[in-house]
Amino acid sequence: MTKASLLLAIALLASWTILPTDSAFAQAEPSATEQAEDAVPAPRAPTARPAPSRPAPRPAAPAARQANPPARPATAQVPAAAPSVSQPAATAQLPNGASAVNEVYGDWTVDCRINDGQKLCLLSQSQGDSRTNQRVFAIELRAPKDGRAEGTILMPFWLKLENGAVLKLDDRDLGQGLRFSTCTPSGCLLPVSFPTVATDAMKNGKTLTAAALNLSNNDVVSFNIALNGFGPALDRLVQLAN
Image (cartoon, rainbow, N blue to C red; front, side):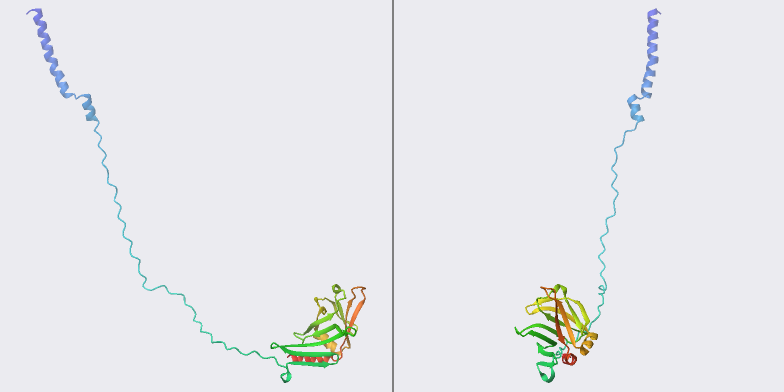
């Protein structure tokens, strides 16, 4: 065998020996892509989970009908008032059915009259100016009520009204600091209120004096009120007024 033939035979033998090995490896060894595909599983597409089903709302139960309506608060039964029968008011009267009575007791006058169904009784005394024939001073008292005889004294304009007036009973002080309330076309008014103890003393007294100051010269101006007949006049006033 020649050298050339020997080399050819060795080459053929080597190729035959290697080829199966490569082919077997090719069959046994998967490609890198195949290994990757086999090693990493293909991601599965997420399957949509059905939304949890909520229980359907139950239909509202019909409102229970009240077997009995709510009780109303009890109200007291008030009996109907009987129709009122108007009673005629007591009619003011004077003795013998007279509409007016005027009586004089000493220096005092009792005057009582009916006006619009009302009885008005006064005990009074007045003094006038003989030159002008006008009244310049007067005192009027109403029948005692609640232990006091109230009234008004009328005095002239030309007095210091802000200083008030003073009353004396037989030189004894009976009232200090009396104040004038107002003036009228006839003169200025001085309200007075005599308690029972004062009227009792006046029944036994002689003179009641009302004094004030003269506006021009501050002289004391006095008016003397005679108490002659005051007791019987006051008693008669009370009798007629009641």
